[in-house]
Image (cartoon, rainbow, N blue to C red; front, side, top):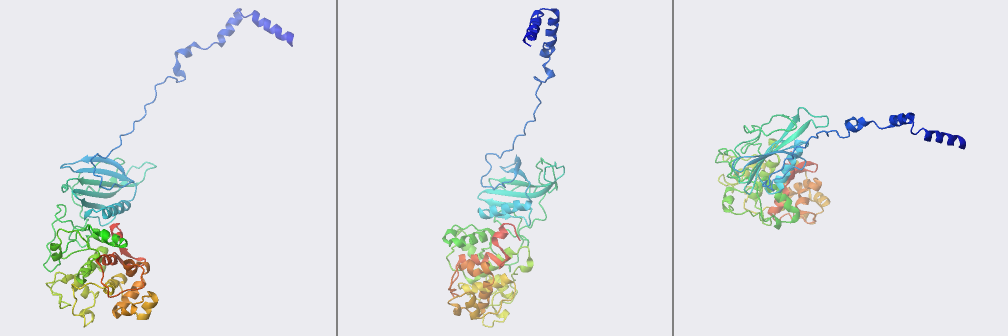
Length: 459
């Protein structure tokens, strides 16, 4: 084997300069054409053009920080308007009722005065805070040419804002039910006719005084009581017990802690709630109707009707000229408060300026919670349920209300207003804060509605 290898090596060495070896070397050399045509393997090809991303729309630097922005929405456009007004438009894949609830909550808890609010899960909010006027329009849209991974529906959110408080020249945007992936802002044309306005029985929001956006109020007969229905902002809520502050705030936002015309004149320059002050019977009667009717604004069958001065007074000390006659008479004619109309011949005086007592608070409120006749009750039944040490001091008529309230469980007025107690103190006067806590919720456990529900858009 060694000899054979030596022979082969010698042969190759010997023929290295022969014509055959030259031909073999040339056949194994690299193709010179490859050096001059690099495109064969695409090494120096011109790169493909990549699509550039569209610039992201940004809010202007002067966009008011007070305006709440729905978190799961994408800004589409911002259009400056006249007189400092501007329009910003978003889109969201979330349902419209989610967005409506968000803005009800934000406007309700951040000291906005609600000029207008939608009557369902879509529509228009209009709210004011200091000099800032905001209109939020929420409209569901359907996508006509959706991509395979795109939602078939989306919600269009438009915010008109006026930093200087100037009324909007254009009302509500078009309600076209179609949308494209990149919609454009269209000019407004006319006010939506299905939005309840102040003066309508379906309108549940407070009316902002001296606002150019609200239509002229209806001419009301002289027999209709004049009250202020604006959202109240109180500066002394922190003086109320912490557990009751939420109730005052919510009812104030709904604008149901009303004042009569005479009281409004006296308290023109004050925003004090005076939570520890005793509430009068006339004031509680007015709040009771205002709160009940606000809770059931969309259900006229559960509202309490006020009456005109043509009605025969149920109480000798509440004549037709009394500023709260319509409320007090309305409660009497509905059988909510004891009177001669309900067969209580001894109830000829209402004593409108007397302080309200705890047992009276329950006696007037419970019929509106249960919406039925109060159960029969006796002293022993109240002792066994509530365990009050002073149950014997409760008026016999109020015993039924106290027993019925126990059946409301955690939603009972006594538990919400007074907390845990073994002393009811039925003759003790009720504070304004306690009255607000009682009126914050109407109904029984598992079947009722609160002021918070109304602010969140629930009915």
